[in-house]
Image 1 (spheres, rainbow, N blue to C red):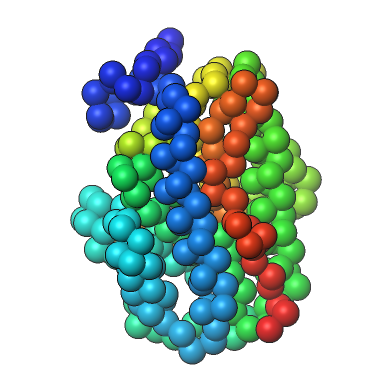
Image 2: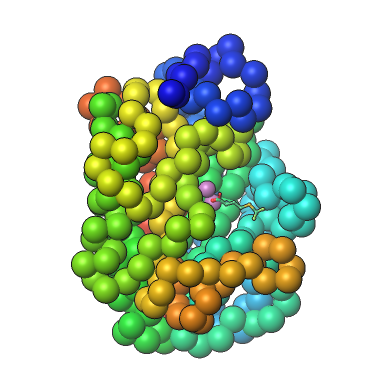
Length: 276
Ligand code: MF3
Ligand code: CO
Ligand code: CO
């Protein structure tokens, strides 16, 4: 049984209860998520061959500082960077380092800026120089799967409806959905109930209600779905070393559907690949 609680009065820790947020809260999320979206927009021209993920990470930190926001990943459970940068066969939680990006790489950059206590969590794929057609197709399939998952969101639908929409589409494109990581409730907490699985069956899971806020962030592999975490304790990679892609939006359930808080003000939700 799930319990839904008024976010204004519930304790600020993950108790497993599902918070329902009010209109002021939605405005707080809108502002935090739009700041993150602008940061991800700024990265489009900065992601180039020769640039290191540490340089990208430093930009994210400075962008946060310049706008009164703190990166949520900084010192989160021992993580020491302002972003996650997941290249090629890295599924998620890649740690920025001083290695230069190479022509043909694809990289997910995941940023969460905390503004006035609200967590703006979003990620996009970026192509580095000339990207191969197979990689570009994976990116297209992954973004489309995110949109199909989001299209299933309305009051009365379930988290399983989101998962089924994503899984059916991804598998129809001969790709696979990663099972080991999921979307999550977000708001005043970085990671909260409920879990949003990117696979599953219609009608399963938790019933969606107006006021819920969560992320949808499918990870899609060109090969098999299995992942392993490297010895650094963070970096998740595909076991078969096939390419992996991910996009993430934060959304709020409204009376008749949902609002995507992290939409790019510049229309760069899926940055162009292979045009530079
Ligand atoms: N931003 C990631 C997410 O979408 C979480 C990163 S946690 C970190 O939930 F510690 F790896 F940075
Ligand atoms: Co997230
Ligand atoms: Co994220």
